[in-house]
Length: 195
Ligand code: F6P
Image (cartoon, rainbow, N blue to C red; front, side, top):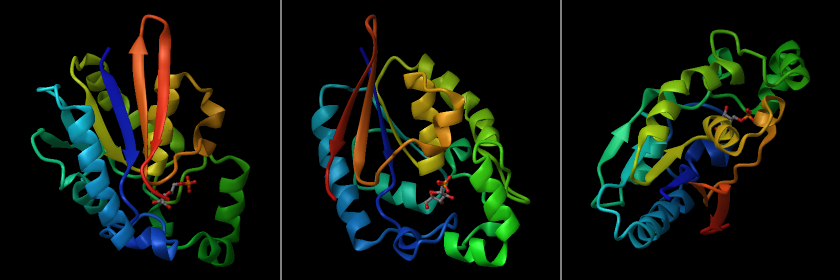
C-alpha cells in the first residue's frame, strides 16, 4: 500500500521567536531538518518513481522541500497554515495581553473559534477537502510538508479522530508521520529525525 508521509516544515525563525503565522524562512535547525528529511525521503521512496512532494505556498515549507531532488513538487494554497487574521505575527502572550477576549474565546472553543479576519479550525478542515480528495486518488506515495493546524486536520481525517480532538493533536517539529492505508485499516509510524 502507498504511504502518505506528513511533516511540518523545519523550524522557522517565527517558531524560534514564538510568533504565529507569518512567512518566515528557516532557522539553522530547520535547515538541518530539511537535509535530513531529503535523505530520509530519498531512501524511503527510492524505488517509487512516481512519488510527489506537496507543500503549501509559504516559504518555510518550500525551503524544507528544497533539498529533496528527483520528485515533482506541487504547491497548494489549501495547505497554507491557519490564517490568524488580526493576530498574525503575534506571540500567544501578546494576544493574551492585547486581546484578552479573543484569547479567552479561542481557549474555550479552539475548534470553532475564528480569528477576526482569519480562520477557524473548521474553516481549515473545509478548505482541505480538495487536498484530501486528491490524496485519496493518488496511487503513488505523497510527502506532505505543511503546518501544525493543517496537519492536525489531515492526520485526524486519515486516522479517524473525533472533530473535537483536532485542535489539540500533537504534531511535533522535525518528525515524519507515515500513514499507510491497508486492508487491515490505518497503520502509523513516526520517525523523529532530530530534537
Ligand atoms: O506556531 C506555529 C503555528 O503553525 C502557527 O503559525 C499557527 O497559528 C499555530 O501553529 C497553530 O497552532 P494552534 O492552533 O495550537 O495555535
